[in-house]
Amino acid sequence: MTTTPKRAATGAMIGLALGDALGFPTEFNDVPSILAKTGPWRGMELPRPAIVTDDTQMTLALARGIRTAADRGRVGPLRLARPVREEFVDWYHSPENNRAPGNTCLRACSLLDHPERDWRDASQLGSKGCGANMRVVPVGLVPGWTEEERAGAAQLQSALTHGHPTALAASDLTARAVYLLAQGTEVTGLVGRLRSYALENRTRYHERWLGDLWTRTACDASPESFIARGWDECLAVLDRLAAALRTPSPETDPCLTTGEGWIAEEALATALQCFLLFPQEPLLALRRAACTAGDSDSLACLAGAFAGAHLGADVWPRDWEGRIEYRDELLAFGALWD
Image (cartoon, rainbow, N blue to C red):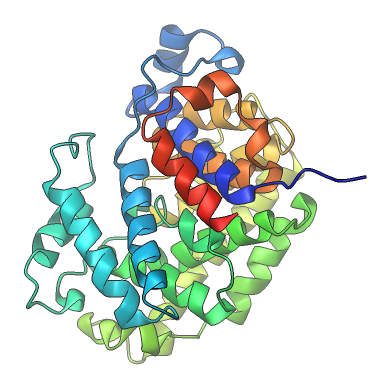
């Protein structure tokens, strides 16, 4: 008997765009306003046309940069930073960049637009906005990377715009969650495995990838204490997530327990909560994330990536997949990494 391949990368790339498009019209709205607009959240329908936000656009920019780097050989900090930086700057100048992009991304990309400038001088070390990890999904999907390469790439792509240690750690953890789900990790053990990963890496500063980034802030005595600040905030929110999942309440806005998702560690935790409330019902996971008081497009984007990595490409309705913006490019990256 032959089993159909899961195609986790295709599932994750389509899932993140579907979540992004579902959450786009509800971002900046509270739950009562969303329900007044959409009706019961369990029946939310994908908008027509299914337009995405900067979350999917920047995910594709990162994916293109990774593909360029891979075409040149083994991934490394210099080989990755150059094309990803170029793709981020291209996104910054694109007329399509009109989807309420985050200020940190815009500020950093305007600084990255000067090729002579070291990227570390463009990085916004005070920002741990979710722009760091809303786009990191491709790092969890590329086959053949070592654990060090995956962690380094996740943190480097964050640091190009968001240099705060919590943004770095949350991006690393988000990519790790996608990778584990794509590899078939049981959902019941996922939060525990992420917690163990955070503890193992708590004082590990990826100097090969980040260089002297840590010295650009005045509040850390060592690279270890710099990065530990980020992992500690992620560990704290993972504890809140574990507590919320012990007494699951699917009808309650998940933002009330794990945060609204405007900042990186809360985006990871609340998106994970939406996914883990409905691990076998991906559309409900997306709808729950889109019907929140928080950063609904980014939350649904990540929830869709987790669900797609876990369940594979065939879980998304053909009608939804068929009309998602950037569909052909999303499918091309899925095929490349599957």
